[in-house]
Image (cartoon, rainbow, N blue to C red):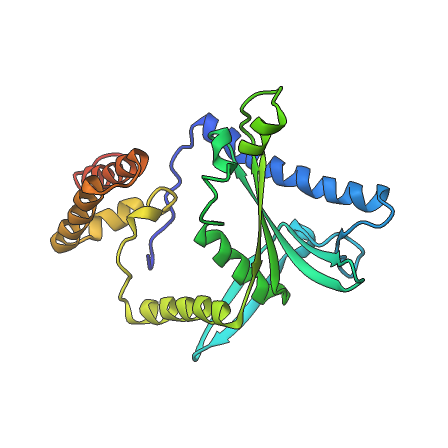
Length: 260
């Protein structure tokens, strides 16, 4: 929100540990790839190197790309989990991006059933942004689960509850166009002072909750209430119904002067 400061609410200790564990999971995968580079005769995957000979991930690959699209100017900035080189069976070398996402709530999160719809849309769009920044068309999104069913599992149990799930994504010009159009629309809306409608699905990690709650109109609140009521009557999982109701309760509390 224009002129609004980010709200730095206190984070419970368990959330801080959760975030750090997620970062550590990505570090483990990166070390495994580096280890394979050093100790495997002909590794299929190796990390691309920058001008200093450092592997292209995290701060070694930090980049800011200035984009001009539909007459609007904005920046894409980030540090991906890796830019790799893959050697195919016929010797062709392909540049492949890597994005590691952690799952830590339950061992079922990387099961075939839980991942049947493929990678999350937001994760794909993140890779689309990186594809623009690093000029990479192919990405691997690797979900790594920190929760385990048990230490000793049979092959059948592990097949049903694997600790990883990998998805290959080929990023097309149409996908890049869609993301760039979205960012251009944001710039246009910001220039016109017309904020987009609130997406209650992205409320949890919103850093401007108090300001947004205070500026919502009565009509916007009524629309959110209708959405939440529709979710409660739908066939969505109970946790999604609970989260939606929690967002509405949070907004109403903030509007009444409650704590964030």
